[in-house]
Length: 513
Image 1 (cartoon, helix red, strand yellow):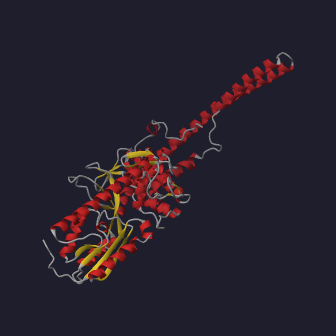
Image 2 (spheres, helix red, strand yellow):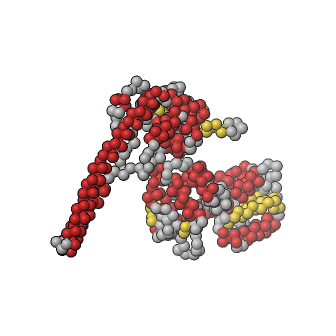
Image 3 (cartoon, helix red, strand yellow):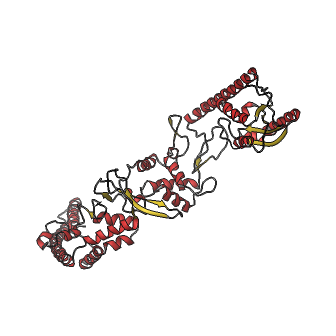
């Protein structure tokens, strides 16, 4: 619709843009602003503001100064007559954005003007403006395709064409340059992969660990949880460039091995907890995965919720189905107190422990007696062989054995003695005080809950695994488990006699070397 008769204020803003560092350092911005000011002076317009965009592309409207310019023009408190650019491609390189943003300006009473192109509201003028916008977009896409083609070719040569990630740097500038491990940050990034592969760190814990070691970002900030997640997922660190649907071996030194990277990906995918259980991932919640819901069999996990004042409250909960009546959050202190009370309930009575101790001591003494008898027998055989060896020396001295015969017999008898000495059962260098060892064991059994409470999180996991190897089922109030440690079986069978206690071999420590 023609708008020639609309009265606009004789004011304008100038918007100039360059998209590369080289242009910023040159005179392009100055030239654009100069031509725009000369044009505004000829038209009799007052320049009320200037917006200079440094190093941002016009592919989208998400540009800092561009958005400021649009907001400035759409403010009804200070009407602006004209949005002045040196060329239309400074305004937008996307025809759709061009039309949309120009419509926004028009609704605010601001008209787009170009120093280099003639714009008016005639049918021919509007057509030429649209054609110019389309060609600006076409030119931008051609440039992008050419740039991508060049990058694809360089990537196929194993060259990383973008900014180096944390742990790498570009030591040399110029054609064909590539990245190299940063001598300071590189070892710390490698340490991050090694620690994460153990399966005991969350991204947040890993970030705190590396921050404590001195790792900082390019802006000298400490690493964040989000950065750690991005880092662990990046195959570039093991020498693989995965872009443009291609996987190319990089022509640069990898920070880590592919085996280490793949081990970390197994942890990410939940397939790599072969050594450390998943519950060890968060030291704040040692019972994660150890408890399961008795109704839906879902494992309990742990997390923190933040109150209105920013205070964090830890809870155990499980992601059960909507039908599960036990799907609720339980405060961490309450949940762990239930577990400690369950440990206390498993503790055998003192009379059972005394009986158990008597049986183990009896077996221990019997084993030592057999041990002494076996060793005495082997010792006699060794003494007999030593006598035979002395006889061989005597026969050699008397001339009945030649040198060769003597050496042969000496080797044979020496091997026999060596074999017999290997049969001697060597145990502890000092006799083990079994009574003291059992008292130590019983002290732990009778104070298991307190020992668990005071232990570090790795020891907690080991202790709860030893006490209840198959984990614990929880019905919201009570705990139960299908299997406990052998010592806790005394609680289930308080009437055990000595014969039933020794039925299962292996209760006592082994006497083998």
